[in-house]
Length: 344
Image 1 (cartoon, rainbow, N blue to C red):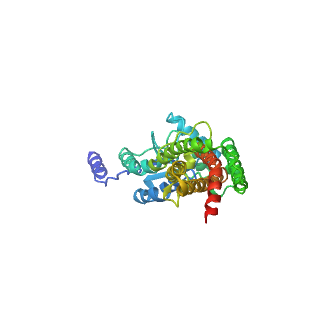
Image 2: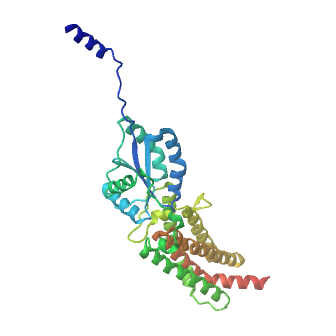
Image 3: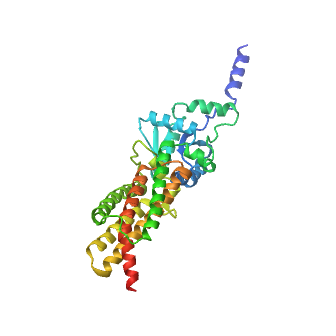
């Protein structure tokens, strides 16, 4: 009996040891984005694909479209979690950490992935409402899918409804600019001066200085990819991070505005202090700069409520200022053109 017990014990001990392999660590993250955000597209199309290829199933990122009602609700929950009053997109939430912008995410996300995997993985962030959404996806046996819809194909009514107050204000400013353009065309054909010269002397440099401050701030936001101070109306960050915030995808519109207001200030100085033909050319050039600025502002302001679905209060301020500059420059530009034409 004892021999049998010893043989049985030896049989058990000599069996090959079967190791239990633990499940691989996984890092979960949430990316809040907007379809109209150029920085978001850069993160989605350039930053994330190499990371997915490198880490495979150990990295799971769900995209949340903040322009959709459900996505906006989750986005507000994320802001509440981190005690933030406002934030732009892209916003990447990884556990108890968050990264903002197309500069912060590629610089810091790989390090968070490595540290998370070394610690055994990172669970889904504790965002109010997120768990219910994930459970709905899992109950449908779809797994954690991207919770996004292609808002770029949404109708203009749907885009306008995302921010009815801010977008309505943009429409009012747009109508005012169109009316100013019509008044300019009508007034330019008449010889009478409808505005006193004091507007040319002091109105234009004051409006140009204010415009330079506004454009300078927008250039700072766009070039450094920081969160803009938007105020109570509109969503400046969505506008500034859209694909329309850069001319040909390269030059930030804010930088272009800085050069534009500097050109307006220079041509005003020439028209005000130069003599003879040079002064006439300066006043006509000032009118040309203001007219170009107004046409560009009409186009950009139209995009905000009907294409982007968000309005930038800073942009509206710049649009109002360039409209005033155009109105102030019409008499001098018209009279200068008539006099230069008569000299030919």
